[in-house]
Length: 113
Picture 1 (cartoon, rainbow, N blue to C red):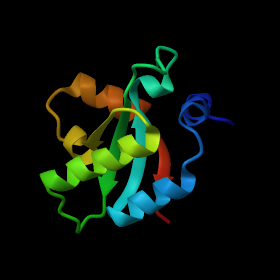
Picture 2: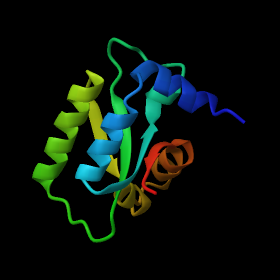
Picture 3: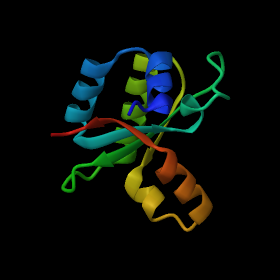
Picture 4: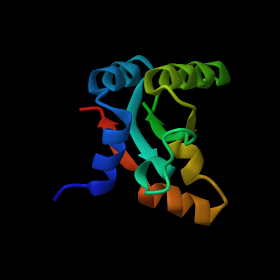
């Protein structure tokens, strides 16, 4: 069964399969998902950002500078502002409403094999 939300998001962003795979491999990301307005009808091509949820390899310890570099790379790729959150930080969040909203709506666009 097709995933209409994901198909819509990928249509909005374009086909960056190779670039996303290279990005995830370079940063040791084992899963990358989209969430937020890019998956919904309230997405505005002129002003909406792209919300990204990443899961790192278990042995990877990222730093703040890494996050900034990753954000810049994705902003260049997508041509718009990007917000990156780690799945671990969301899973540990005390804001259960936000946690459930993000985790239940996230659509995976990359998963390592």
